[in-house]
Image (tube, rainbow, N blue to C red; front, side):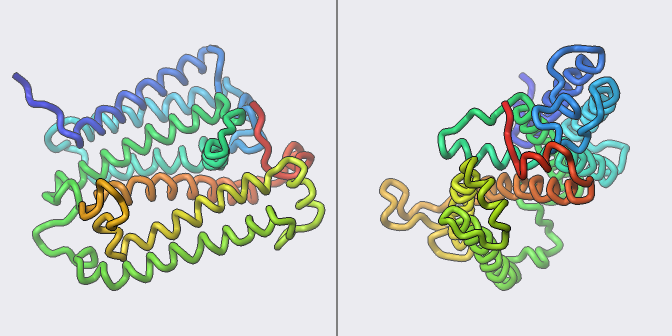
Amino acid sequence: MGKRLDGASLIGYLAFLALLFYGLAHAYWAFGGDGFPFGADDANPEYSAFEHVGRDRLAPWIAGGFLGSAAVALLLALPGRRRIPARVLVGASAFSAGAVFCTLADFRILGNLAYVFMLKFSAINWTVINQLFAVVSVGLMLVSAIIYQRRTSGACTGCGRTGSGAGWTSPEAASRWGKWAARTAVVVPLLYAGTRWAWALGIPLGISEELWEEGKEDNLWIAGAALATMGALGSLLTLGLVQRWGEVFPRWMVGLRGRRVPLSLAVVPATLVSVMLTIAGVMYIRLHFQGPSTTRRTTGGPRFRR
């Protein structure tokens, strides 16, 4: 019988299959298939990095990018060491992820997360679904690249430590800089949430009366307050990284008290939210340099269309 796949190998093969499938999907669209979700065909093209680029020009490039990424993902997933230097494969994975995060994906993933918690699903359209699939695909490849780099360098595939010393990741060092990092991670989202709560309460803090009135008509400030509240709660949970209750479940948690908190319970949600926030932030920076769009000017801000 053959060897069973471990978790690390499974991630690599999943990344390969997802990227291959999506590359073939874009090849289908490049040859005239219906349903292309990006560029001028985007449900909200005013937020796209390729607002005025049609399917005939954009789909072939995206197909090539994802099929090339699939080849890299396969090299990362196969057992053993490749002749290609690890830094090249890791660099290619990081480039692919960065390209998707900065061009294909945008704030609509994060915005729809807020709407989902409000039980509103009407803004989830075909473009948002494709953005999410693209982000997950390159995200899996990025994780596979990290695992490959650790495996080929003799480090622990789980934590990345080697036998030569932990350095700044040692418990002693982490206990020093980790506390400052956790406190900063708590304060910054609370400052952000404060402005959103003010807007929801009718206080146009930092914005014009006109812009506040436009947002009020579409209930944007309520959605913003909901998203800000989630961020504030998440920031408070960040304290668990440097507190005892973040390592062992407290007494009041019936059925879990006294048990060790799984590392993934903190790392996975934090990573997902960090990626979505980064994507949203990059999008707004891109829009600033991209210049004004007629649709964005007339709508006065973020709008979702089905």
